[in-house]
Length: 168
Image (cartoon, rainbow, N blue to C red; front, side, top):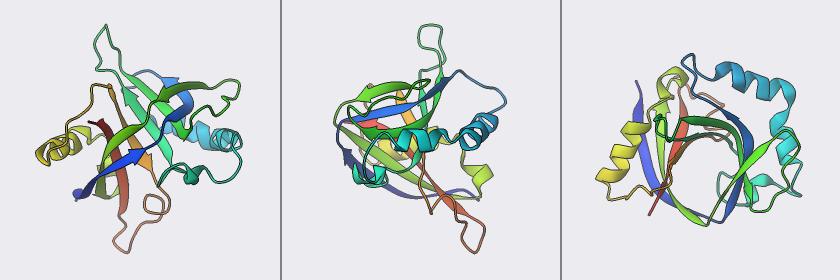
């Protein structure tokens, strides 16, 4: 059973998200994530900086599923796969980027079976609002896959998925 076990504010410096943009997919994004691992695309991005990508901010070495737009004709839904990197990180060929200013994030930890955790943005957003967070006007939220809490199941077979929003 899925459970929201933690929420907190996180300050991050200006960041550059580097990745690939996908549209809305009624069948999910598992195949696209598989391509990322098969093609070593996360490694390509990480090689753009010297040192550890996690040095930029806490949990900065994580892979990200970035979601933008509201699904309307004026603002279609976008799903990106990639990583938050230090600002001004060079963008490798065949990748795109989005620059984000210094920001505050509202982070929720969802605990449970991997299959129960995806797509629970509204639950997390409502929890953050209930706790007094004001969701920023930026139309972005994200799934953050932090190792080992997402990759190594506990003795119950559960993991933790971070879901984040830009907040004021």
